[in-house]
Length: 168
Image (cartoon, rainbow, N blue to C red):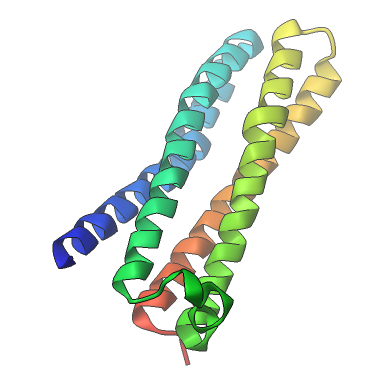
């Protein structure tokens, strides 16, 4: 059982690193590079392609995080019956509640961004008929992505609190 737990933790950490790393890459490398090129049509095309690929990476990471997180809780002797009580108690429970709240927000924002706002912003930009609308949608999508990155960093913080104890 311990080997399964260690493999699960390893996959959990890799999935989190992949997910967060892809957001950092997008924000710190790809977007600034594309903006310097000065070609709005090329930028829209590349962002659309990258967004589609990164959507798969993100949602695969989410599935892995949920599965491996469940394995980790089981290893710590939490079961389905603990969802209504013991899981939420003490410093571990508080950190877990904060982490799951942020994860829920990330899932919601990601779904809105990936399946509605991002595709809409890309379509309006590619059509090129409403420059003002395209820019507003792009900015909203950008801010939503930044917020998701901040929430992801908060999730990592609360994960540390779960393992190392609540501060104070």
